[in-house]
Length: 123
Image (cartoon, rainbow, N blue to C red):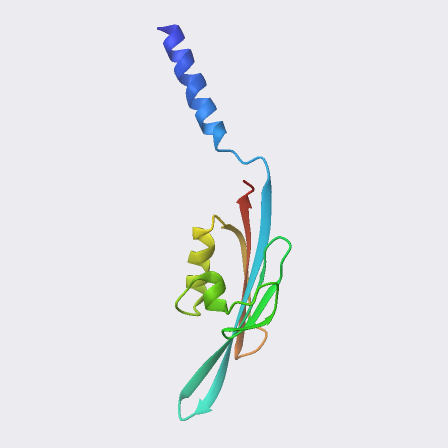
């Protein structure tokens, strides 16, 4: 019985440690929303998005690539249907990225910048 318990504990420990990551890679996402007042209580939104995965830097304004290693629009790059930051976060989660840091800044009444730091296990 003692051996059965010892083997069970060893196997449970080995199984839990099998999923520990030996090496991480990191990325950052910055998402700025600007509100443009069109008058008559109408507003329009503009988005400025920067994504920095390892070895890359991608920058989009609205859906258009401004600078980067890819030639894809924001929606194509993240395989999303809307420009909302939650869609981007879900896409990154599906790629194995997990957020470990977040901050928010409101430099003006019309701008808000949200930044996330991500990590994922190197395969």
